[in-house]
Image (tube, rainbow, N blue to C red; front, side):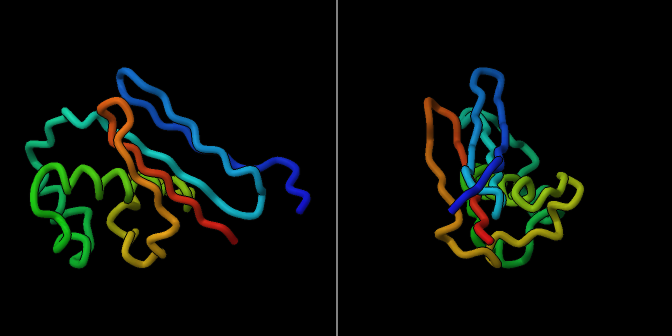
Length: 116
């Protein structure tokens, strides 16, 4: 398939930069990253404000909140939306195979690929 330009997404922490590239113009990609050592002292309040009810049931502690948060941000970037739209985005409405998550040098990284 001839895909002339492709799409990309960028994310960074204070120590790392990440770029996700999808070599096809017919789709979207988003990446987000956060340091694993990052403290999110208000994670419970943020969960209630920005996560759907289904997503809230998945969050048990600060680490699980952080992983879901970067997944949500990667999805928002793939949709071309900003953080203000995070509450409207439901990560559970997207097929699990559209996401990749891992830890890279003490950074939690999430990539969302939305093929068309």
